Length: 232
Image (cartoon, rainbow, N blue to C red; front, side):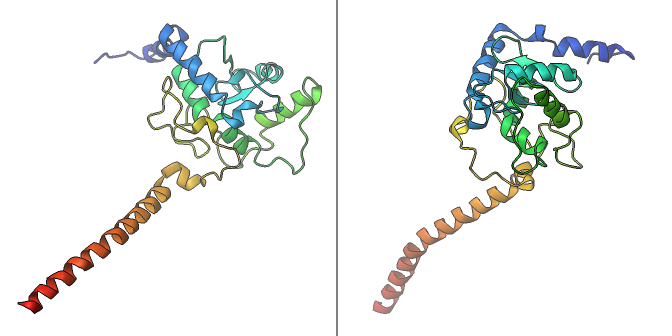
């Protein structure tokens, strides 16, 4: 293997993760994936103001936003939100995977968990809009308490992100994923993170159905065998 001296590893990592390492074919695949993600019901509206058809995203938070909100996100600093155009910029594979796993649905469940009932989102372009976005992401006034947010470093195991499995960047959206309705019941955090409960219940139901199908045939065979013994 390659041995790194002290200090060399950190200087090598940006090269491996830089946009220059993304091929043209990868970039085209990312663009197709982002286009498909923007057709998911929750991603058809800006995650912050609700404006229709967002074409920008926070590649570090995993949510899709409109042009106006993207300007506010830029003002927060890249340590809070890294803004990318879904149609113009080059994306890294992990950034696409983050938006795929989190998206507006899961992002809002985390960042707006304590939003007051009946809250009215500020008008786009006004000072209230910037204040709301800052309160939401910098001050974390409405976020889930006692839990780090889903981000580029933890989304693969975070309870507020759906497991990707084989659905990595460049792969097509799974059947029905882009058309799933937002009012569909979401898994609990525990089952979502492990997947044990749904799998176990499905296996139990399948076994029960199999037993129900095979029981009559087994009983018929035993009855016939008994009749042959009596006749003999």
